[in-house]
Image (cartoon, rainbow, N blue to C red; front, side):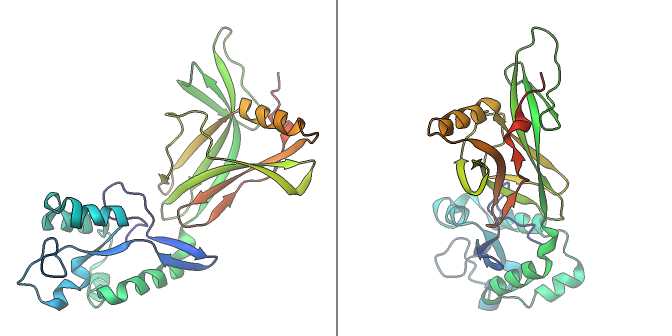
Length: 271
């Protein structure tokens, strides 16, 4: 119903995170459309306390947006605006479901969200792919091809070789990519890896993090082949060798997607 994120338009803060494997926890505030107490934003003295804490008067906001809506700029966010957010986000709720939800209150909503998420968790799914890419004309275009198979381009064209990480949302709910790391295996020992995180070789081209990937869609992040070469040289300086690599994608829920492990030699250009 909440479609996985804070109700503020275009906010990608997830409603649920995992505090430990298998244990979901609500990650947003339960906010009031019409204020809960005298002096609070949009307080309506004609409402009863039951109406104030009823499901119809509640929506989910991340901490910064809750602070913005209720404290920093309450005059900018009217009752009508917040009702529009709620109606838009919950548009898929059937009449029968809406009738059942009327019994949910502020006190029981957090537990209901966690229970619902646990029951339907399997519909939030994602997959990762690792491919090669050729960046053309200073990033104006990119050709993504199977790993290691860099395409030929017209003579005189400025090109740069890269590795493409593709994240696809394959379930019914969006996923939020929070962070991306590359792990380099040393001397073919699965227990020894060097981690590179937070690097963005193509600022402005790569999607900014955190990034929401809607169901059926995908987003691609590029890492310059020169970055892999830099890591190889750095490890070689210590007398060791990078033999394999893999990607790890941190999701906003706390889960981690892992790519396959690839031999480093697969990145060598075929020319």
